Length: 113
Length: 116
Image (cartoon, rainbow over all chains, first blue to last red; front, side, top):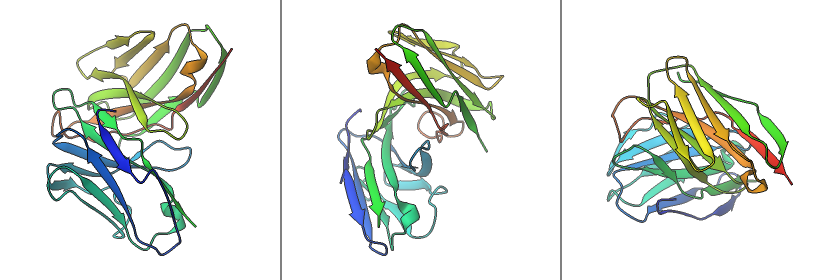
């Protein structure tokens, strides 16, 4: 939706490995969000960027989670020393400038063994 | 902290029925509210966006209403079809930062199955 590409679509990691998930908005969007969706649950907010500035990271579950958007376009969510409880779908979303409507990518499904 | 509840959790109906999905939220200070559908293994598709000043929005067979003061929104689906089978999520957006910012808080969704 609205040109948000996420990669990889699926990632299997062994416990303790580091992973990096990428979000690439196809057209320029000021606002970018990351959400985490556990199985059978609604998505939960992780972090918010306005251009390259990370204005809210209050939803990041621990200091093992880190997100960046260095040039205000592509964003990367990094999870260090993955744990089984990190298994979830990680969704990236961008906001329409005029209405505030959010458009989501297909998500990256992370499975930690 | 905003809390969102969706009722029913699951719904199974025959094709052709008109449906009502309910969403309630605890904090009425919202900027807008979005309804999404999610197909298995997929991301979220935006269905309708209602601004806080609006009472309802319509798109095709879908109609969403918003009663901000009572913390409720309803998604009405007319003449349901098997292709409507999906999980439906509502998400009010908090105030603060206006258009760009404001976190969405999601309910757990209603799993809808429409059988032929």
